[in-house]
Image 1: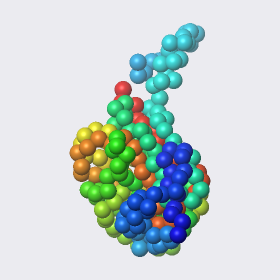
Image 2: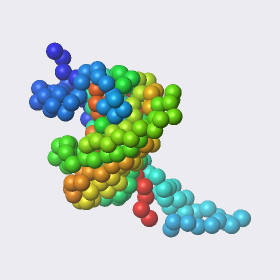
Image 3: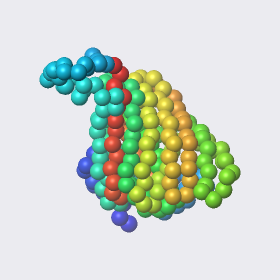
Image 4: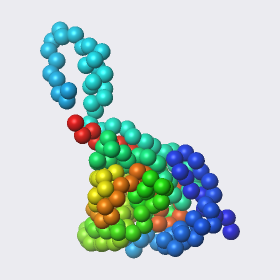
Length: 38
Length: 182
């Protein structure tokens, strides 16, 4: 599966595997529900 | 020279002009044009000793889903985002109900729309080695939200990471301004 891109200032690159694992661990979903207002 | 009153016929000198150009209350610090389909945007070195208070302004940013929110994280000088010790609370309403809903959480959160999101978030003390605060009054395509929060870690942060809690961001820009202190 292609990992999402991240942007630092104007540079856009694909996430590293480590960054992707951290993103998933944070609760991020590819398409999900609103974490604020449920 | 914070304030000077000019009189009729007085010569406006280069010195005065330059002083007042530099004396605007809100000063541009950094920005990013948001790329296509990015899961986060980090604006580096946008916090520094010159300013203690900042405005982060979003214009025309699209979220890939209409039901996501923005998460803000402070980033240290080594490039590591702080992921803990955030607290936030606030309330929200929808456009189709007058019910006021309270909410609290462990992240700094704000609105995001599926298309053309615009809004403003205030951040205080990020560069100082003390607790930092944020507040926001934002609206998206579903909700109007008023939030405030604290990050209790007494450390200095230089950068800001902005990410949707689901999906990605595309387009628009994010600009950081600092409040001139004197």
